[in-house]
Length: 429
Image 1: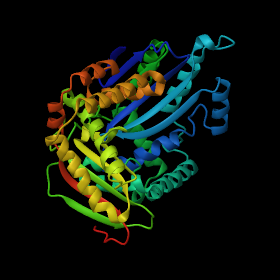
Image 2 (image 1 turned 30 degrees about the vertical axis):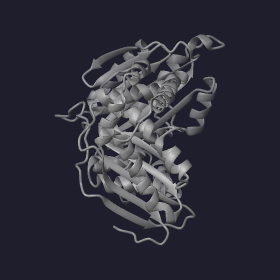
Image 3 (image 1 turned 90 degrees about the vertical axis):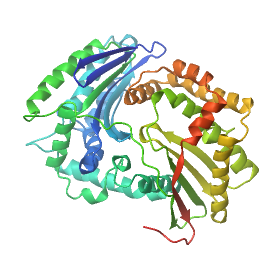
Image 4 (image 1 turned 45 degrees about the horizontal axis):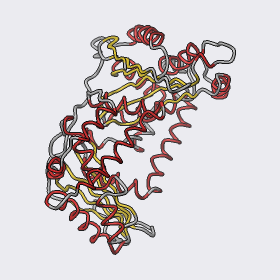
């Protein structure tokens, strides 16, 4: 792995990835999450993906990608902890596999940097019709959340947990902001992205030098857009955790044949990176594997739920557990979950359990390198934590985790929010 700082706030990471005949190049723009810009940042990738100044027509763009042996170009956004990330990514076969000896990398970079730095705008605004079309799509995406009851319940629990803090920012923005989001405002969001974001370029399976050259040239042109006093990059939000609070329970009635239960626990403080492998194993033992306590005991032995899994968000210092239940079994399932957590703290943990969990996690770590997207996701996760551990290093760390380490991790959690999708229950606001 090769990692280099090109300028303040601009980093390039390169991996050879010789096992693949394809390459992948991504530009990741990282911004601190903010309520006032959440909807613009959610809409911006959707409008950008329609084309750029050099190729504004979606049909022409699709044909051009097809001629490049089916290359893929995408623009998408998301959240990493409390920070917003907008990614422009292209993937395709390497130069050495081009039938006619074409310089495919040069064409990939033209598309990638055109999409990132040369938007299809006129008079300081994106195309009004395109913006309206994508606003309608984003609104439908926001409203469709309720159709996936499992995801909806978990998101509702997190909303109650985080409240108005940066941890509670919506990935897809807010419907009430869409009407006021003009083509000019969206162009200003793009300007903010290219002039103030931390930039992480990830190059997999190809030469990084052309990417470095193009990126530096693009950012030099961007400097002309910077207003006086512009800070680049804006500082990202650090890891955080919600404070311990009395348990808040909510029930929302739904028209469904199955109830949902989501529980969110706080650690009260961010988890140091040095303890992350301990937490990974603790989560695997609790509810992250087919041999976990929640699966084997709550689901299989007691038949209290259809599924029951746990997860941990390091940058937000919290654990979440979600389960699908019969309406009448909701309270029993909740108590059974809490019992399994208590057993991991005070009860017996067999060496077989520990080894089963380790094998499962190590198998997942071995699969990271099975795809370029998997390598990229791993790299960006490590970058967001401020570390660059390899899967092999993490596997070694897991081998050193003890039963006492697991108990130490589970003791850190305090139940904060319980959210239930009930049948005819009272909806608490």
